[in-house]
Amino acid sequence: MVPHLVTALNGPINELEQRILESMPAIERWFRLEWMEHTPAFYASADVRNAGFKLAPVDTNLYPDGWNHLSPDMLPLAVQAAMAAIEKICPEAKNLLLVPENHLHNTSYLSNLARLARIFNLAGLNVRLGSLSNDVKEATTLALPDGDSITLEPLIRTRHRLGLKDFDPCTILLNNDLSAGVPGILEDLHEQYLLPPLHAGWSTRRKSNHAKAYEEIAKRFSKMLGMDHWLINPAHAACEADSWTDGRGLEELQTQVDAVLTKTRRKYKEYGIHEKPFAVVKPDNGTNGMGLLTVRDAKEVEGWATGPAAAQLAKRQHGHAVGPLMVQEGVLTNERLNDAVAEPVVYMMDRYVVGGFYRVHAERGVDESLSAPGASFVPLAFDQSAHLPQPGMKPGASAPNRFYMYGVVGRLAMLASSYEMEATDPEVEISD
Image 1 (cartoon, rainbow, N blue to C red):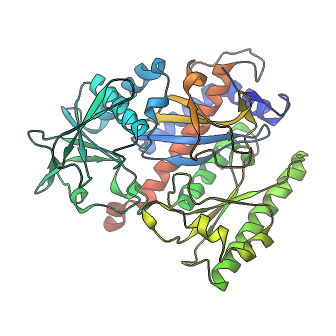
Image 2 (cartoon, rainbow, N blue to C red):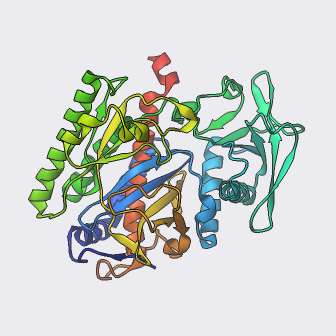
């Protein structure tokens, strides 16, 4: 099931699909060589936008939730990838502690935890859930919509180890993006594997660092395929000012918005694209789709210091003030499911694509973030494997071919996160 494209199916996106399919052996070898030099994120998801003339990731999450939205048919792939990931890190692993967000009343998120626990249980691990929430003072069982349930337990810290009552794990898996900061209970765990590492959390991570790493990778990948990297790479710029509500910060933001829009206009003209370019301004650390603003003219920024724009950018998790911002080239989504705007989300574990779904929002436009209240999720799109493209099929006519292309772009984003984590690893900085 492939959502239909509004744009004609004979544009650059199909040329890109054709080139990727023809180059599949070279692409897979390229990835193999990269993974020999770099460690993939333990797990990740990438939001991908297909504009019909461009295909690019617009957000990469290193603590992905939403595993419950993947097709059950993809479960064997996820279990195999989990086995591979754990084997590389801790072959003798027996117990895995899963530490979630504090979304105790969000049944969709709790269903995500149940799916994650099942994946690692099928991979041969004893899995229990330890909560950071002060509200969880004893083992608490929560019912799920499908009739199943999960049990959260209070974490117990002893010297350099973290566990639960009568449960001593060798591996701790975070499904918490640490946007509220790093809890002390997670620090200085010298005798256990903490996945992902603490510097992958939004208290440290910056979207602009990821975009810079992705641009480097996209350029090398595109050179190998003999194509323009812009077709898979959104332009971006970082605004370093701590406060954008003063004159200097606002001026810098306006300058960077103008630079990104100018680059985009130039490319639209080169490719004969008759859309109006836009940019997305977002806090440089994670927002779960909150605090995003769309802009089509740099002059719009002049009135942002106060009013609705200021309030929108300040709409952050945990009430944090907005600091540095990132400006990203806006990528339209011209995909539809039942006339609602849609975008594919690719899920990966270790170095493997393990599935995905379409995020659908009936009340959002083609130039807006779909990661917002009211979104729905359709796992049907990835019922067919993203690993088995069908040679000889006309571009745009084969679901596996389209999903393979999405998977390639998703893996490029995951590789960028590996570069990003290496560059910000505090232990590497100490050794230098």
